[in-house]
Image (cartoon, rainbow, N blue to C red; front, side, top):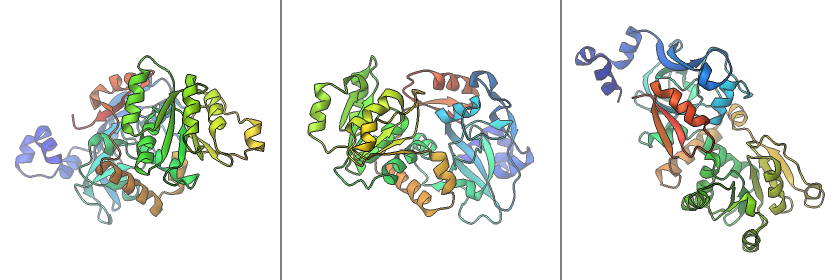
Length: 365
């Protein structure tokens, strides 16, 4: 792929078999990137310019980016409302996949041609064509994954993986209930849970195409899908009769929606909040705490990543998630692809309410 790009950019040098990495050094250490120098409205503060890639050293890896998604956390980071902030000016984006085109003399575990994902807690800036990082700032993944899956594997699927692994000892046949089930994390969670033979009860907000959405989630492996408006309906009562009470409830909405989860949680069960889309506080019913002895926890993937930077548990998680993709158990998320130069359109789409696809910047176009 690097060779094809070289033929397009510098055909005369390609004929002389000059390597892509040497071309890069010949023409400087800057990369076309989406950058911002102040926090604010992403549609106003982002711009496309050549930004420094970083110095190349003995432990460095030169990465040609292939694709990077626009995640809600990226938007919040640009707005200045996210707890994790890079120093300004900064390149946008935290997640993405790239190809190694050069390694430093002391790099041990990566080779030219390897595909890697960025460690999303590092604020490396993924919305660019090229960057230089240290070996421990990227993770190797199998070559050949669909670009949509590879570019988005480290945030939402890994969040879903940890939510299912870290809070309850779930066994095949156990039940998990979640709100925001149509979110990127929610859809990944449905698929991972199905692969592990867990039962999922999935709550969504009503919308004009609600039946289409329900069918989509069921195609992913959801056992039950119900709207928030129907939580007190005979349909929900029938669902509850035929399943084990959920040991785990997962909340990314807050407000009344999170209150509803407690109604169905098993005694001594756990509710984990990992998002707050409604911007309303999580209120715990007194009876659930006193009589059911429920546990109330929080989870932030960036914090987990920071605490497990070099742990085998993280490498094993990424490997297992990639295996799910390879085995057809975890589908690539629906994506709308945009060339890097069209980032403004991508940002506008990412900000649009009820957007049903992930916006993906493609660096090779």
